[in-house]
Image 1 (cartoon, rainbow, N blue to C red):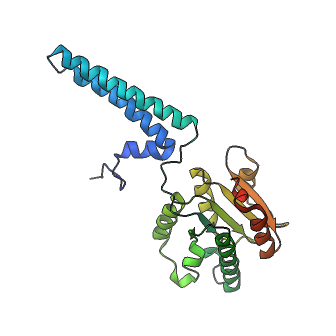
Image 2 (cartoon, rainbow, N blue to C red):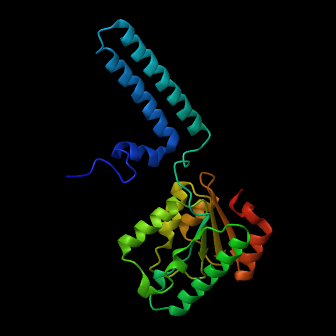
Length: 237
């Protein structure tokens, strides 16, 4: 028997609306639902004054909720339902390195340095699975790893992806990039100069539908200098 509620306490249908249309969409649905419910329930009262009060009162409140929902949608606050616990989520290829421990260590080092640079900028609440579990022997099972990173991405205000010169064949880091873009998280990609970008990352950088910015680097000093020079404008703020 399936559960009819998600962990957040919302019925499954409303949870889907919240995920796809944000708070504005949810408020509109609740407003319309309240108007319909007040009309339906109002007819069950025998006293005319009570009928009128329920129908008019419920309809006015429902109409007000609907108007608020429309305003939220028009202002683009579809992501305001997310609880932002992390100032930035830093991602880099890790599991895809396989037996290449040198490549894994290089990724850990550059992420560590990038985290320090962002913290000097004032972004103290940094989340990065690369530093949380730097050794392959400490990785969670894939299902747990996905759940952990999904929740972290839902809670991230910004997303920063560091791509190496050659992408490991088995990397899954681009999945986190796709989730960040889908959630509307402002995204920055640091890619090695001259290295080809994954096809859809290139498309996201060029697209005006999403918030993805590209910066190229030769070594960490260039990443650090870009962070120092641009500050929070790095993320389009």
